[in-house]
Length: 303
Image (tube, rainbow, N blue to C red; front, side, top):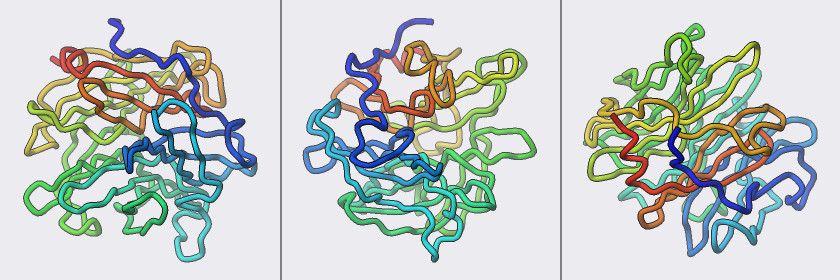
């Protein structure tokens, strides 16, 4: 496997020990640039086991993090019954023309996981919008502009044990339709044979939407999470133009192979900074790490 991504020397960037309150894990952050700072929307698992979404800010996106002690999205509110057990795995998408960020996240309850949507202008306050649909759904990511009058989301419903990446369209973020299977899980011994799921919100390039996604393979009773790259059509993002032949990033560092869930790299945040992609990811379901890659190098993995 060619080395496309380079791990930050300061990894892991954030652990539970860095938080100003008690927690057992910090993981799977959405990422944004706002008001001259890098903002991470961190999933924080408390000592009981429930998750909320907290905000961390840094001037350079690597260290000096200022962490909000109160969550931006808190589980267990009476009026939001589908978040009884947690708000998890956020992604942040700047929506062109609306002047706000949309946050897609997993709303977890006794009914199962569902994809929730909220919006914010400043990461200080938030407005919940809707659920994508029924439960047993994860990895929801909004694309950063409309297609005609419609928003587009990628998501990963569990359809009887088959876990592919699907798309859906909506004019109001409430009623969703026009489904398409975008990327199917792999076959046999392939690196993504168990399931696939969207990572950070896709990056729009002149050739199409660049999507980083995760794939899972089973080995003698345990799973390994790796990453692939896809290019989606610029104006019809349910159409795949190209895929990386294999995975482009896998667990190797100690903080990725050892943790609450070993052998997991799970990206949920990405920033395009010049010609370089900064990918923020959860490592072993316990910590937050950063890896960077040249955009051209990622494009060259596509076939």
